[in-house]
Amino acid sequence: MSTPRELVEAAFAARGSVLTATPTGFMTNCRVLGHGQGRGDHNPSLSIREATDGTVLVTCFAGCCLSDIVQSVGLKIPDLFPRACHPRRRLQPRRVVVRRERSPSLDPARMAALNAGLRDALDSAGLAHLATTLGLTVASLVALGVGWDAAHAAWSFPMRDGDGRLIGFRLRLRNGSKLTVAGTHNGLFVPDDLHAGERLLIAEGPTDTAALLDMGFQAVGRPSCSGGRDRVCRLVSRLDFDDIVIAADRDEPGQRGAAKLAGDLIRYAPVRIITPPAKDVRQWVTRDHATTADVIDLIERAPVQRLRVTVAHTEGAA
Image (tube, rainbow, N blue to C red):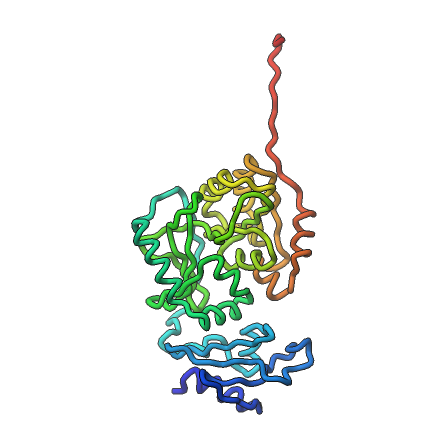
């Protein structure tokens, strides 16, 4: 059975690509039709390397999407991974509802040590590979504290409570499934540089949050469409934001969860709900090439929700 590297090399060679050896792999021309604004890749800009676990790391320095690159040579993303890492069955992502605030089972010292270990385990090549796969920048993923859990062969994202305390880790498996590390709890995806003031955008999940960070917004992520409401309220009450925008998925659970969260948050600041014209924020940005101006325009067209205060007048009062 061919290794992922052998499979990738054969796929490019079969289409006439010239493979130039490098110390870590080889360089070749990117075969994506839209590369170079349709002009093609005349100066090889596609790096292909093999990680220590046999995974093939593919990086186009012109920014072509990984799915487009592998499709251009007749492959799929799972072909880049060793057979032992392939899931036996496709796991369906599930929505996790946080019903009440809880303290983490792991003590703070163990949580901090685990976080440091996960971040240290992700090298620059793996980080670049994840960024390319998701269509995000390395900077936004680093801001969210992304790491690598070798035991699950999954990328990790730390989760925090409304006071900024580390309480859990979300794992993203290679097939897109998600789970929470045992002994930890669901929380918020909070970038390192979040600060009071300005506008805050609230997304669902770490990758939508990263997409908004890439566009220059202040953003945090919830663990699911209905989870983390208490934690978000605590965060917003602690930091003074000018206004709040909730980015909701188009499905019914996403819309319902956004409406409930907005009802909680209007006591702290004016709130808007936006629904990107795609499955989620990241797809809108990476597939449909939405810009910061597009997001601002959608925000400005959304109705503002404010807390209404009614003053009751008692008959006979002076």
